[in-house]
Image (cartoon, rainbow, N blue to C red; front, side, top):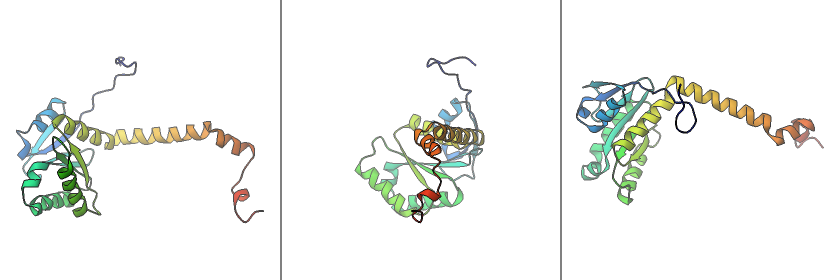
Length: 185
């Protein structure tokens, strides 16, 4: 592998299979995902506006904040509830050029309605922002990457414990759990 401009190793390009609702076929999100060399498949059975990263097990529902605010609240909330019930690991990608008080109020109402579910809301400003977020979430939850992240976290934890001056001091004085219990005097 060659070196990148920051002096680190160049990473292999991550690609995966993405199932996109046929309603998004002409949407710039689909084009942006295809241009990143992902294998894109279209489905008539997916909820309108849905994108599923099959290997990662994450699903995204794309919604425009302005369209939500101008439609009947029950219509878009029902669509979100249906999406949550179908997809276990679900994200609502909420588009708005600016996330001001009205958009925050919309997100609050959606959160209230979906309390107890596993829905996460990703406020985004544009297509690039949305694609970057979706790919980051999907990549970090895919099997080889999640295993790598877990391994690095365990290794880091072990290193911190080994190098900790507090830990070394405790080992030197052989502090056991018995000597710190309130019963021992």
